[in-house]
Image 1 (cartoon, rainbow, N blue to C red):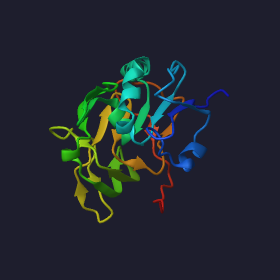
Image 2: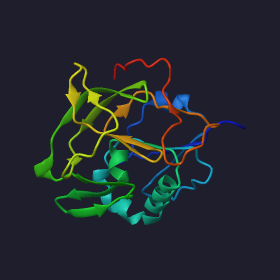
Image 3: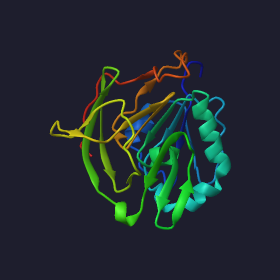
Image 4: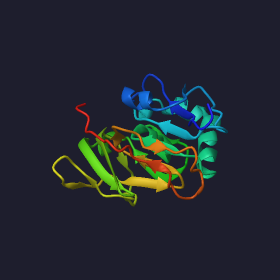
Length: 213
């Protein structure tokens, strides 16, 4: 259909498994791929959505899928629009470090994630932040952490009590990435694909309600 947005979503049983059904339902022209097995064709994709899950449990398979990681990096570098949440954000980083070694990921974001047992720390709770005048709500649940210095954030994130938390919101070109699982994905305007260097066409829905999940 002319004017509709083609959305491609990473999805499998565990590594990319945390997706709100409401987000799938509100998107148009949705298809899925498994980053462990499939090399996506991204030429006509308007939005690539990398949801959360447990990629740290499937690092060998993700490393083997080199062509997939390269395709995703190329898509980001040419201005492709992407939303990455928690495990999806980890997948976009340079590498994930575990007690077994270092595992290269997509390399879109110049950060490393540690999943080493000694670095495990529970980050849990409701989250909200405002970006470009729009409020986003979601939740955070993970044990992995950024390795080394925390990345700079594009927005201050707050918990349910209104207290600031150090979770960064990362923007790179048209990539929006965070540990926060968003309750409602931003809306992509198919007629506003202008600037490949600034994420300026992700629009928040007008009726954001905090989920009870």
